[in-house]
Picture 1 (cartoon, helix red, strand yellow):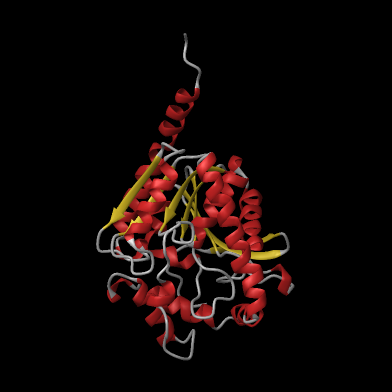
Picture 2 (tube, rainbow, N blue to C red; picture 1 turned 180 degrees about the vertical axis):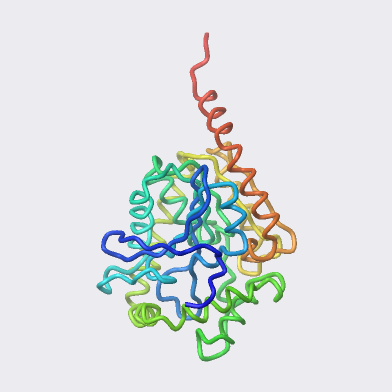
Length: 312
C-alpha cells in the first residue's frame, strides 16, 4: 500500500488461522489501541492507521500496539460467512492479546473498539490493566445520531468523495480529517478482503443476526454487570465536546453508569473535537490518556487498600 502514516513497519501474525496485521513500537507498559467499526460496513472503512496522529507519541512512552481488527484494514476476513459478526470480532481481539503474551494491557478503544475493550475487561480480566473508552457510543445507554448525521452519503459508497463526506461529518470541523487517513481509507476500500466482507454482510439477515443481535445481547449483559459489579479495572472516558455522532449527554450517562461501582472512573472532555478526538486534538488526547495510564498503579493500590478489612 502507499506511504504509511504510522511511521513504523507493520507486522503480521496468525491468530486462530487469521493473518492479522498490526503495528507496534516503543517500550514500557503495553498499550493496545482498538479502532472502531466492524467488518463489512457499507459506507465506512476502519483500521489501525486511524491512530496515526497519536501513535508515535504513545510509542515514545509505552509499548504501543495497534491491530487491524477482524476483516478490517489488512487483517484477513473469516473463511466462512457464519464466522463474521460481533462475537467473532471480540474473540479475535482476545486471541490476539493472548498470542502477544505481553499483558496485562491498557486497552484504548474507540466506539466499537471501546465496547470490545469493556467486554474483554469483564470476560478476561487477567488481560486488562485499564480501559480507556473513546467516544464509546456503542456502550452508552444514550442515543445514537449516526443514522441521522450520516444519512444520504454521496454515491458510490466507499469512493473517496463518499469517505471524505462521512468522516468530515463525524468531526467537529472538516479540517479535522487527516488527509493521510483519507488516502489510507481509499486504499483499504479497494482491497479484495474489504469487497469480500461487503458482499458477505450485504445479506441483511446475516448482518442483523451476527452483528446487530450479538452486539445487542452482549450490551445488555455488560450493562447488568456494570450495575452489579462495575468494570473490574480503572476506567477513563474520553469524549469530544462537539461530537455530532455521540452527543455529550451520552458521555455523562456513561460516567454515571460506571462510577457507581468503579470508583476509579474519570471523564475527560476535549473541546473543539468531534467523534475522532485523537484526530482533532491529538496533543490533548495523548496527554489525557497517558497521564491516566501513568497513575493506574496508584489507583490499583488504592483500590486494594479500600478492599482490605478494617481492624476493629
